[in-house]
Length: 267
Ligand code: ATP
Image 1 (cartoon, rainbow, N blue to C red):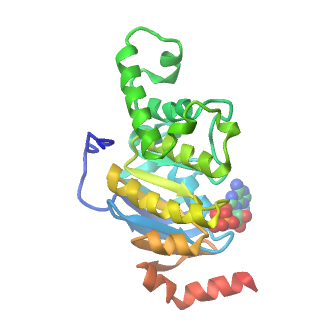
Image 2: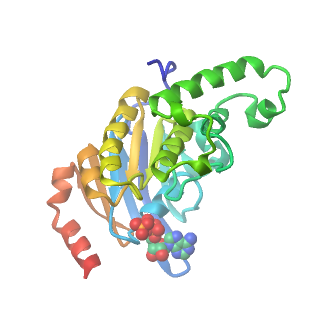
Image 3: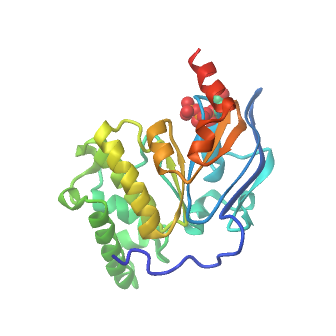
């Protein structure tokens, strides 16, 4: 299925994402304390760590929801801190949220189209108002939205309001919305949370299929160790805002610092 006809422009050498010495403080709490790591093009990278480790803070820095006081993030070799938040989707960074960020009263198809408009020239409002010159773009949007609906197995619910759908299905709609903006980097924030055992199994295959089909890079925050270790090429582990381990899933699982961090968190 030709879901990604155009390759992403400008693919300089080096990692897709380079996080360097990132520091974030909230009134006395150091949420990130000098974190550095790279995410290579085309890999599935997992970000793990006990509660409060700083994973969401890092994601929020990557989507420019939080400012960082020190350090840098480079995406495609360009520093993120100089770019406004609303440019993230156009730049090629898409994300999903722990608590879903969908328009509940809109249909599945329309939610996916909102994501598509992040990349159209005329924008969602021009399309909604049917301003001149939108017809061609509208046809292209409909075609791409249809492809995404089929890819995610959402055909039967495409016209249904999101509010009427089970949680697992809504999560797939959110994936569709994020994919619609054709990200080079897809940030998945706890995609397994709230899913049952079977759904988590299907999610692992879906994440791999998304990476392959859309030729993108995935960074995944996840507490479900089974999922993150089976799907990731590369894992970064945080604890109390610091990187405590990094490597292949097998390497990270053997890390005494990681074992200690989780045992400590349990205690
Ligand atoms: P979880 O797995 O529970 O989601 P996490 O690894 O995502 O945890 P963060 O949510 O990034 O961890 O939190 C890291 C630290 O920063 C915690 O001590 C948290 O209380 C604090 N923190 C995060 N966001 C804020 C905020 N907006 N204001 C104040 N403190 C914050």
